[in-house]
Image (cartoon, rainbow, N blue to C red; front, side):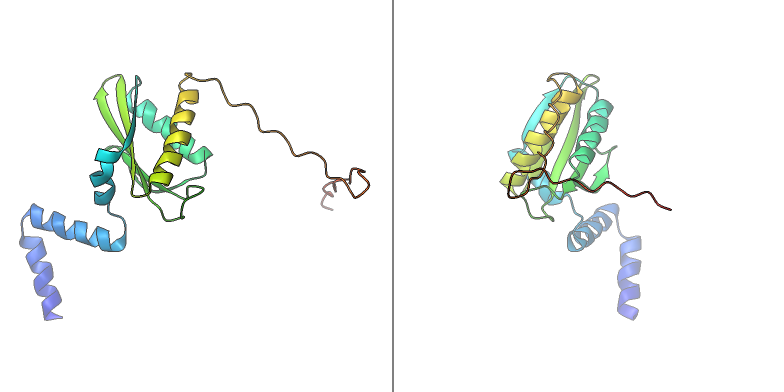
Length: 166
C-alpha cells in the first residue's frame, strides 16, 4: 500500500512529460493508444479534399455510420477517429482516420492501420462515400431486391404478412 502511495505522489509531483508517458503506457496496456496508428501514418493511404475540415469530419462520420463500422475512439478537435468492425477484417482491427486541415478550404484525410487489407477496404469505402457526399460522383444505384422465393415447381411461395396485434 505504501508503494502505491509513493508512486502516486511521484506521478502527481512530476513533470508533464513523465505524466504523459505514464498515461500513454496505461493507454497501451488498456488498448486505447493511438501511437501505433500515428506511427503508421507514413504508410497511410491519403486523399485531399477541397472542403473545410469540419465538412470532412461530419461527412466521414456519416459514411462510417452508414457502413456500420464501430467508432472505437474519436477526437474531432485533435483530428482523428479510430474505427473497427470492418467487414473482411478481424473485428478488433483498428483503422485510424486522421484529418489534417491544410487551409480553410482544404483537408487531407489519412488512413493508417497495421492491417493493409483493412486499410484498403476503409479507404475504398470512405473515399467513395465522401466523393458521393461532396457531389464528385453520382449516388450509387439502389441494391436490387431479392427475387421472390419459389418452391420445387417454380411456384412463388407466399411471404407471410405481419399479423396485426390485438
